[in-house]
Each structure stands twice: as structure tokens, then as C-alpha cells.
Length: 222
Image: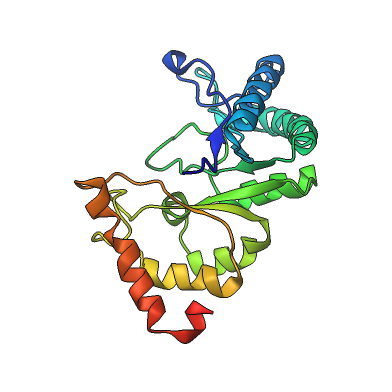
């Protein structure tokens, strides 16, 4: 089994931190954590690192610190891209929804993440697309996937609203979404970022269903 992705250190979890890349005044700690993550990834043969943006600091309102957080994020991402490039690695930015999961997380929409990536302008920084978060933060998945597909470096899945297996009851038609990604030429991994309803192995039965569906479509098996 191969490890395909790990996160940068979250900071002080007990203090409510979830990443440091966009947190002003924490640049030195972020860089130390990034170097640790690169070391771990190198030892484990992993070439993708999720650069965690972090939460709006407690006691502050987003609108008053958003500009400073974005400037800090861009500065840290430019530094990270150089370090990761030397190691032959890719950095990933993941928008996390602010409506249910992380109300104070700085990076919460694909539009914001794409805007940051365009400002940083580094080819080894990509978008980590978690369809659970994308659906909550506006949906319109077909168009958003097509629009941002050139930036996508990793995909994660979970059904809406309970964050269970993709074939569990919910809002999303994952057979369609998997086909869309395949039609667009996606060659990367799909991470199971969901909460199993029961036994993990039985919960992976959705893969068999999808592969059987592909076997019945010659275009999907080429």
C-alpha cells in the first residue's frame, strides 16, 4: 500500500488551530512544520502534501483580517512551492466548507482556492477537490469540476449530508461524477474521505458497483 497524501502539521490543536499557512505572524512555525512534512513524506515515498491554510484566529472577525491572511498565505505558498519543488513534490490546497464543518477555516470555496493559485503562479501547487465540501459551498459541481479541472491534483469523496460512502443515500450521483472525471482525463487518486456506516471492507462495495458499470461501457474501459 502506498501513502499518496499527508498534511502539514496543524499547529496547536488544543488551542483550536487547524493549519498555519494563512495565519499572520506564524510564518516561522509554518516553515518548520513544512520541512517536517517534507521529511516525513520523503521517508514514506509520498509526493503530495496538503498545505493547511488554518482558521481565522480566535477573537478576530474574518472581514478585518482576511486581506492580511491572504497575503500571508501567498507568501507561505511561494516558499512552500520552492521547498516542495526541490523534493519533487506537489502542494495541495483544500477548500473546507464553512457552513457545516469549519466555520472559521480561511479557505472555503474552490473559487477562492483557484484565485490564490493564480496569484501564486507555481505549477507544483494544485487544488485538492473534496466533493463533500464543494457541494456544501455552492454545488454546481459539473461546471465547477470542468472549470477548475486543470488545477485539480487530488480528489476526495463523501456523500451529502451525512458524509458516508458515495453510494449511501444522499444528494450526489457519484457514478455520474466518476464518469465525468474519467471523461475529463483525470489520472490521479480518489481519496475516501468519508465516515463508514459500518464495516470498512463492506463499505467499499461501491467500487465494485462502479467497476461493473464501467465493464458494461467499452468507452470507460479503454
